[in-house]
Image (cartoon, rainbow, N blue to C red; front, side, top):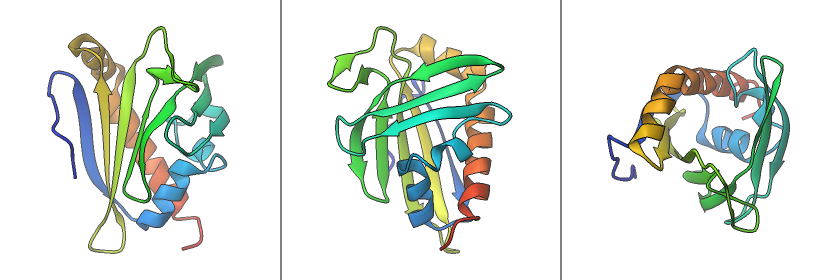
Length: 158
């Protein structure tokens, strides 16, 4: 179920992925998979720490054009193979982040062809942060991530 969206603070898209929901979920919840898709190539994920529980950490480190970017966050909601919500508003131990950017809501549903209906929502603390993310290329970037996720998941055993 897609939550009510605020057009001033939320960015989202839904698209079918040609891979089973179980594999798409696995890609998002196991640290060995995240580097394969989670940032548009040629940028790279260089480190991942996942503790898949409410309040557990979801930490990633990116290499973007030679610059290291650390992202620290926690899981807010986990519904196995249906919904994953994480935020950078807090770090592990519920420590508030000094400059939070977004809360991500990922929804997974079965598509008629055995694939996954995938929804990605980026919820922002303000309209300005939402506009900034849109200008940074949310739709293009998260679209590339979805393409990479689909391609990678198709290489995994079903």
